[in-house]
Length: 382
Image 1 (cartoon, rainbow, N blue to C red):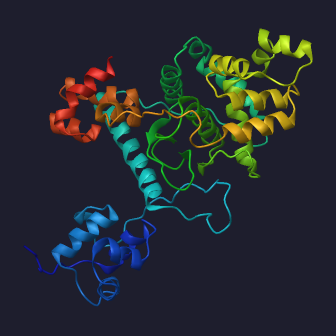
Image 2 (image 1 turned 90 degrees about the horizontal axis):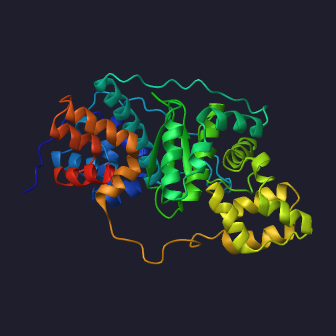
Image 3 (image 1 turned 90 degrees about the vertical axis):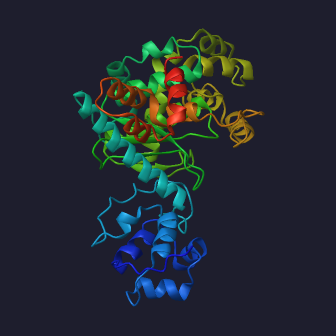
């Protein structure tokens, strides 16, 4: 049954809601089923929307009806700077899914802070900063010592190591989330203008060692107080991206330790700059990185050739390289913990166990149905 009841709405809010998702009127018309002519009338204030039309706008723009009925368009913080290696036409233009991922990260950060406040747990205040004029490797050495990352080096399982790295970074006062970034060639982003610094990592289609590198690349942005939406391309000419890549590499592969590795010393003595894949993989597993990261470090220290590096980079740096051949089906509990992180999930359950929030609140904080809560708790402590 249709509801043609006219609702008083500010046409400027309707325009804001559409533009905030970076879609034009033709796209909005396709998504809502509302004709382009009618949409124009609504956006120019010539006509008022029906309740059914507001429901369509709500679904298409990912906004509540209450938001669409605000008296004035709200002020939203802009997207982080575009740091991608793309042509000029693509710069600054993002798919609505990317915008939604950033919006979700901001909302999760707000919930993260609310949970800590509910529990009376102080929010860590980030007090580590860097300058683009500083040597990234020197900053990396300082951060490694501060976070005691040598502890993580002892972890063999790369997925467990990634979780440990995330928890270490969160100790600095940074919220870290793994989100769906399926568009715009993004691997991660960082936000420095919110209630707490935020790092977003691409959740799907990425190996754990790639996520680890992204984590520290984005931490570099946080330390520089310069957020960004990044593809982490080696081909970048953007100074800050080069700085963050160098910082992340040194955090994960400390040069002083790397050059003392027995395998590296043996190869250096032999004078052979062509490396066997098994040796690269062995070093990569030790440092929780991929073989290409090891090759890059070798190249920087003149322990391999540019030709060999380029050959392997071309062969291995492909979207399908190293992915699971038989990916598992959806596991809501696992996805929830991966997306929000164990720190956030633990805070939510602690608030519930201490009667600070009820079961409905817990469901809202976790973003899952009530039926998935027991499995999520079980998996959290597995």
